[in-house]
Amino acid sequence: MRCLSSQLLLALTSIYAVATGAPLEHTDFDAAAALQSHGFQVDQYTDLAPLAYTSSSRACEIACKALQHHYGADSVDRPDEAAYTSFKGTYWSAIQSDVHPYCIFKPSAPEAMSVLVLLSRFTQCPFAVRSGGHAAFAGASSIEGGITVSFQNLSDVALSADKKVASVQPGNTWGSVYSALQKDDVAVIGGRVENIGVGGLTTGGGISFFSSLYGLACDNVVAYDVVGAQGNITTASASENPDLYWALRGGGNNFGIVVNFHMETIPLPGGRMWGGSLVYEESSFNDMCKAFSATVDNIASKDHRAGMWLAMAAQNGTKVASVEHYYAEPDGRDSPAWAAFEGIPATSDTRQNRVLYDYTAEVQASNPDGLREMYYGFSFLASADVLIAAKDIFFEEIGALEDVSGLLPVLSCQGFTLPILEKMQKNGGNPLGLEDALRKGRPVYIMQVAAWWDHREDDAAVYGVASKILTRIKTVSVKRGAANDYVYMNYASMFQDVIRSYGAESKARLKAIADRHDPAGVFQRLQPGYFKLDRAPVADSGYFSH
Image (spheres, rainbow, N blue to C red):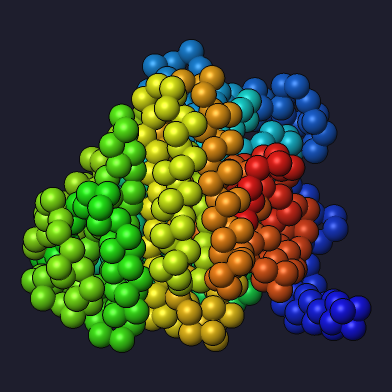
């Protein structure tokens, strides 16, 4: 065992050396000089100049004033303004809306993000960035007392002359992207809910309606334009800064701020596809779980155009489950992928031809804004037995929450099919750490406990029950040889150390890349929210992690 540990240490040290090289920032880096190169003169602001990297209770006040003076009154919203209150109310989760930034900055050009990063370094005022604002927990895309950056004015979608690459700025939601591209009969690999932002979903992975054909959203980005810790805008691709390119494909917000995603397009005439749901009563739940498992295998062996998710819920004592089937072309009902569901009686069937944008809007309608929300993620290697056990555990444990006002708890599951795992390897692979599952030839089930409810005083009870559910399912997955540590970032809770769940090798490589591109730790210290390289958003909570 000691020998194995020594070998692992040597391997990780080797990875570090190969991945990094010399840090890209000189030890005498001068943020004031860098700001000047972007047309921002520190000495024009009498309150600003004396700060020079030292913390101050007025740092964020001074930084917000400087941004407003430099970019105009419309670029900054303050707490006493209606626009500030309106912006806070546009978060999907009420928990995020509870956060009070010192100001909201709305850049209108990527270069303004360079100034924001450098100004944050100079003043030590922390910041957060928001693409769509669809994360569930506080601080994910908002920051108490700091500067919250809204990308709402960075919303261009540009298609290359040959229609093979769409350049998408992070202020877009997937609905705006699909709508813009539909007239040219193309789409990109992106989210399945209309109002989810491009930025967070893509840097966290990005499950798509088309993933068994093409992989995750992050696997289909040909290049990123990234604002780095030195305020520079760098291109990261398979041939240019390939270490940064690899890290951004699932590494979250730890390496810079992406201001443009250059995404491969796929042909999708008229946005036309197929999909819808089958709804089942409790007597069919076990058969539904077995059919789900068989279908994950069928997609790999029979039809990569198919995909699905499963969801189970309980409300007012009634248990219900549904399976969403979707297909990358019209008229998908006869696909051999669905054979295992034949003969299982469904109470409703909404599967029909769809248009991509309209389909995402319909899915959004089932995810209302303004409630307290929780996502809590987990994964295990494909197993119908573990899925059935997870279903039973979920329904056993949620009874403890019957007095929680407005509660709707949901257990969902979807498969990273073998074709998805294979597509993750293209262009140098990604950091998610799922190569071992691919080598074993076992799909990975991505599970999530989600819930919404009304009142803050019930938060702890909901988190505690969700943690208990996943802890019990983890135990079952270990006993049945299906254990897997990976947590999908876009479904993770604030108690989960997502980067650690990628495995020791991926984490070491990610840290080495961050040390090279951001040796000062700007995106760890001054952008403290979301999933950091060494910690969960809420560290050492005692709740389930992975």
